[in-house]
Every structure is written in structure tokens, then in C-alpha cells.
Length: 218
Image (cartoon, rainbow, N blue to C red):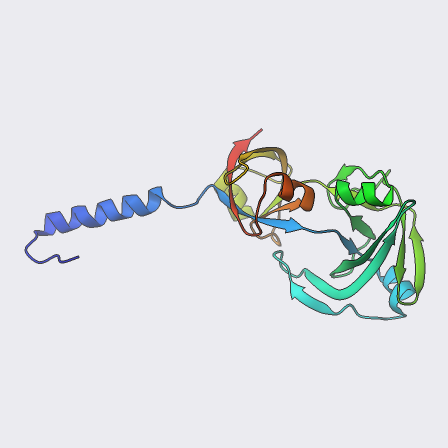
């Protein structure tokens, strides 16, 4: 734009309006979506059993949350009615082995898993895992991961939320709608990202990284 011939007051007005426009179009209420496919978290002892004593998981790709990564290693998940092959292991090691599946996955292999937050494993079904050195049957740990949004404390404050809150999320696109009862998980090691499974992603025809709008606390 040519600002020649305008007064200082007019220039201030132009800049002010540009700032107002920028602020009004910022995505302060939006969150990117990460669609999680089936995966496995393992304890040190289970890694030793399935891959060998003192075996170290091999990072393949960094994930959205700091310090977490997809591994080169995969396992077969064996249920009463079928097998899911080459299910990705995620690192780092966990205190409890956890298998996260979609409802579609559970039906495929004949297992009845509850919707749970990560780490809430009491009363969950077990399953058999097969690796390069053999098989192991875990007594519990299979869940359908509850839909959730990771937030740093600063992000949570900006949204007016705290760890453990539940929110509604508005989704635009080909199949728009509102996703309810979305858990907020906030902590120093959390980076802003909404995590859903493939069933939720397909239901709303969401794409990896698509922005959705947080409507507020339920």
C-alpha cells in the first residue's frame, strides 16, 4: 500500500484497524487434531520378554507430545477371534503395559474393552502379544482411549480450563458436528493437541492436523 500523502493520524488509524483485524482472525480457540491408530506401550520387563534382555526400543518418528515417539518395533495383538498384525509400539517405556485399540479393532479380534483415560487400567481385559522372541499374555491393559486434549498450563489458563475438565469441541468440514465429553489433560510436558482414535476420526471425516474449536467447559 502507498502511504504517501496521508496524515500521521490516518496512518495510525490504518495500523490500528490492521491490528484489530489480525486479532479478530486469530485461532485462539482452536486446537489441532491428532488421529491415533492402534498402538502399544510396554514395560521394561515386557520388552525384555518380547525382544530380548536389555533391548532398547528404536525411535522411528517423534510424536506431538515431548519425549514420546513411534518405534520401529511392532507386535501382533492376539484376541479370541482374530489377530491384529504389526501394531506399532510407542516409546518410551511405561510403568504398565497398555494396548490402545479402536472399537472396530476390538470387534475384529473379539475383545470387550472399556473407554478409559491412559493409565486407568483397573478392570480392563488382558490380551496376548506376540513379538520376535515369543508371546506374552498381559492380565489387563486393553482400552479404547478416551478422547482428550493435551494442554500446557499456559494453554489451559488461556482457555480458562484445568486438568480433568471436560469440554465440547466443534468440528467443521464435510461432516460437521460437536464432539462432547472431551477430557483436558494439562501438565508441563503437554503440548497443545487433541487426540482421538480412528473411529472418531472417520465418523467426522477429520484429517490429521485439522483445526477444531473448543466451545468451552461442560
